[in-house]
Image (cartoon, rainbow, N blue to C red; front, side, top):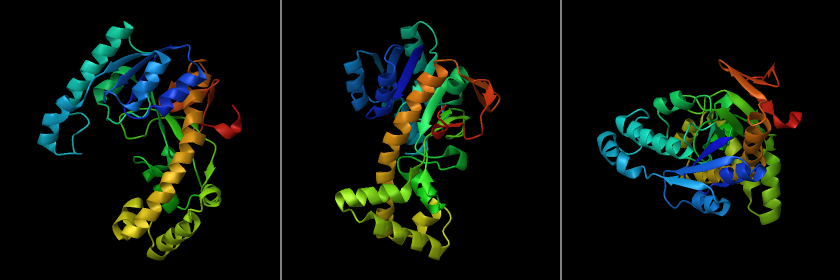
Length: 282
């Protein structure tokens, strides 16, 4: 397979995908020259394409404001069209699969139309339940919803925000057990902080992360961030790094997945909306 990995940061998801099976034709694309992922790419001797997005987005940020640049603005389109031109010129074809491996830019509708359903991603949360957001925010949403465990999700990227058809979910990472292990190992006192958050959320009738952010004190926000960073780090290792390589190599590369509309099939059997869960030992 010709696999293009889009990277912006440390590249650990990309690394884990390659470690599972290094014998595909990998190409690494980055919008951030010299990010940590490129060191990994050099180690693997993979071809690298770097295209800095900042010159393309400078005018857009002035026009729309920082953090408010629309996904389908002309500047993003120009950037992605050049990225695709470079990628397909190097491959001499379209890629068989695009893996978003810690890539920090939105994709345009044009990009998704060109490659759907061959663009996949992993998210450190349950996308079926709508635990969206960057970094540790999905864990916070799950805690506020009263979840006792967290899951990572691999999915086919569509034009929404982490809304595409789900392929695989990780085994559950249990919140209280993970916090207790950290407390025992490093005396972090996270269990006490977690219990304070639970009491606060219950007493204030908070049901969303946005409500929590609006009503909580700076100290309570720090408690939530400390806990969720721990959970996200654990979920990355026990979730993301397991299900992403599994989806790429054990399912897609072996031809075990098919898509019809929004329905994902594995081995000719339709999967539930949450996809294949790893504890089922597929």
